[in-house]
Length: 475
Image (cartoon, rainbow, N blue to C red; front, side, top):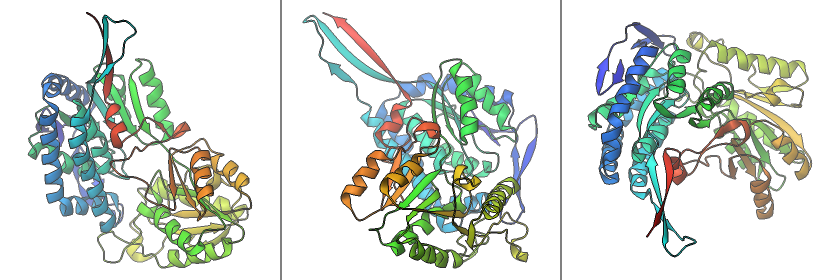
């Protein structure tokens, strides 16, 4: 169903099917939104903007608090839905729902912290005032890999700022979006403030959001390729854009680090969500003095991972999202093998009978990886850990920064000086120092270079939805 102007609606185009990536079973049929549906949603958001933006920050905050309470009450239901539709293990799905709720409660408070300013003026009879106001209608496009938290990471700050929003979820995970919007409906957020247009044709609906002049800001999470296309179209209207795009994260282990501890961290963050995360390590640089122990430990942990339906007890690795993702991972591993990489673990699709209907690839460790391999240059978005040896700090900084991406990076070291140098010299928006989870609703999240524009989360996140206005008064 579409959710437009506070009502659940059908689409003139009919419906499209949504399946479980672990089993191939049909989960349901969802209304297939069109350009016209997107226009209607934008009109509803435009109409609602005047009244929503006129509410006090305290009033908007109460709505977000209520949405937070409802999400926590429905945490298990949402997690079960996510595991069925997206594929991640149930434990990971529960963690994501909590993360999603964190954005609601954080921005419920940040709504009350949108401060103006009084600035000193150069003349005695002059006064300067700074006012921050909501930009207007927001168009949001969200991904399938984190199908609930990426919604609230955009919706919560937009609503807190006083904006209204039209959201297009990923076509692979629209049911998660529908269940989330049911929470906004139950929280009695006024009609037209939040609108949902699922579709099997993301190009058509996405284009309407980006090119419609009523939409004053676009927020997008997805591939760098699509992000560039959106930026080009939005640029024709000089429309505000914030983006969280692809990543190619380095994971650096210095010789003073504990290789066993570092390998444990690498196994957790690399195979989180089956490697389908923009912050997933794609290049693991390990000092030559400890690479053998690190690799041995990582392989041991990987070999203990259990692939399967995320609802099954003990499953730690879920499926990839679709056949195309499966083929991409397989091609990268084959290319690496042909160019001299050693497959220390995994390295193939699962052929087990109970997994054959899903998009499963064995968690893989590659050693002897070199710069001429596809996996060294391209984002994998899958369960493959490529290990590269290094000798000096200067060398590894150069290799780590040798990418057009700049989202996340990770460093393991027990030397404080090394830690600070790496924090300053790595050209990435996020640097985890002995930390594999350097994210939170209260912290700014975003990338450099081709990994994005702007920040989500933290106090910075709400500023993306506000215009700054200067008032000069002569008295």
